Length: 125
Image: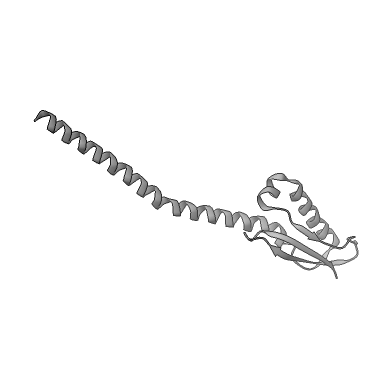
């Protein structure tokens, strides 16, 4: 009789342990979508923030000084491994010379699959 009661206690302890492990797995699976969603939101915010450094230049009639700033920014980001590894390189289509007395149109012509700016075109007016 004494052995039977000990066996029942041990079986109960095993069942409680299995129940706790199962509860932990269920909780972990229910939290994963929330974590994934918050990571996606953070990634989207980072993309918007990264793109904003280029989108402020988008438009018409930019002076050469602003065009040169944009070109410098593209080159700086290209040479920064932390930025280019995460966001990739921006292809720059531009005239061979940026003349100081001219105006230029700047257009973002392509984005990658994540929405990151991947190509900018500069045309002389």
